[in-house]
Image (cartoon, rainbow, N blue to C red; front, side):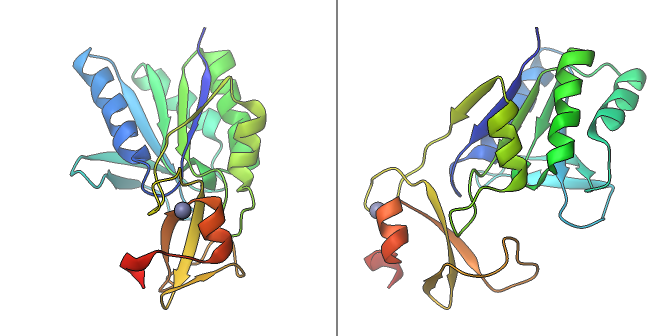
Length: 195
Ligand SMILES: [Zn+2]
């Protein structure tokens, strides 16, 4: 039986590299794994998913209005899909996660969703909230804070300072994100290397 997997981790936890390796493993077995990437705007088409270690692969954009079940069903009718991989799964809508449950249960295709659990303020993303509720298997991909404890928070950094208020998704801003442990996120402490 196919399953819905949610593999979450903070920024820099190699989620995209992991996703690309899974795609490659299917490819090596002459199987067809398809990568999707939800968009936060209505853009559609094809995007390139790149990891920090240099892997890259094309991904199909899912815009917020796209029905994930119908999209996968139609592609599967043309060429059999063996696995659906989602990059940046936190940006899925709640409805799209439910549609992906139908991909698993009705089409019997495994879905592996990679994403952040919570935003810069420590609130769940809607897609992640639904995935945590619905996934068959939830796995953490770990990364570390500068203090070498496990990083679970995604600090938003603007002008060298950790900010905790603002929109969940900033478009075209000058912010960056740093993975921190909860204590250092709470303190806004980026460690010496960033000060
Ligand atoms: Zn720390």
